[in-house]
Image (cartoon, rainbow, N blue to C red; front, side):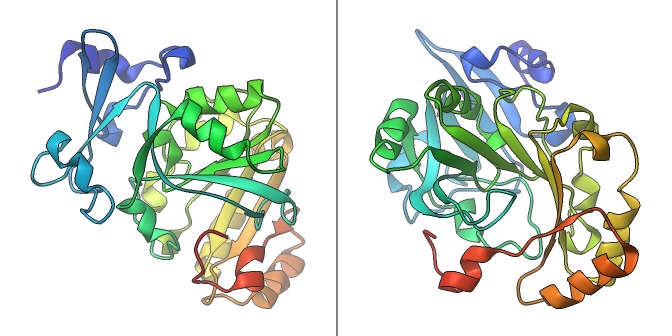
Amino acid sequence: MLSRAARKLASCPSASMGSVGIPRDQRLLGPLLEGPSTPVAYFFLKGRFAFGPSRLSLLRKNLPMNGTMLQSSTTTLWVNEIFYSIQGESTFAGKPCIFIRLAGCNLRCTYCDTTYAFSEGVRMGIEEILNQIRSYPCQLVEVTGGEPLLQHPVLLLLRRLCDLEYTVLLETSGALDIACVDPRVHRIMDLKCPSSGECHRNRFANLEHLTARDEVKFVIGTREDFEWAQSQLQGSWTQRVGAILFSPVFGVLEPAQLAAWILEKGLPVRLQIQLHKFIWGPNVRGV
């Protein structure tokens, strides 16, 4: 049973505490335990996600034997990788970019190309992360995953990056509440199409929070996906958002086919390919 403190987290706390409200139906947040000095949030993901032993052996003392709980303080994050590369997606494609990939995801999309982020990561303090990215000659940073919004301190990280005058991108699945994200951040949010297997997890209320800084991405693997995506291009959100991206599932739908469909229907969308996969190949990590 959840503690009273955990039940109160249905509303959105202050981002200064590194916390974000997570609706009860997303089944992600366990009790908030008030320690001697720092609140500690315990995540339980009910079989959706568990850390493996490969890079997290030092965590075993903090995890139950089944590995289904993740301890996260308000100033540390589970980080899968940090690297410097060329941005391959969004309207920032082609630009040098620093990537901070966080560990853990509550979805299991059929086409996922970063499954290693489900179970690999090390705990890093926010200041440690900031010190590492300062070594790169770049002011564009993307926080991605996995699903970054699963970890409450990401809100503080995003705010700190903005305060340091980085241009900050957040890549999110769209299944979690984006309302508490710093408004200076460019939110790149998915709407999951049917072939993803996670279409039912779309949080359509997020569309009301989008602004001209934000982008919505549809990853399309079939004609059914395309027609579903087309049907979503209704309402005022399409006028507010900065860009609507249609991206083919790499190796499943040819970009030329998706381009033909877009032209056939005359859709006001941007065709996006994953540029990094064409440069370095689809299976290379850290690019």
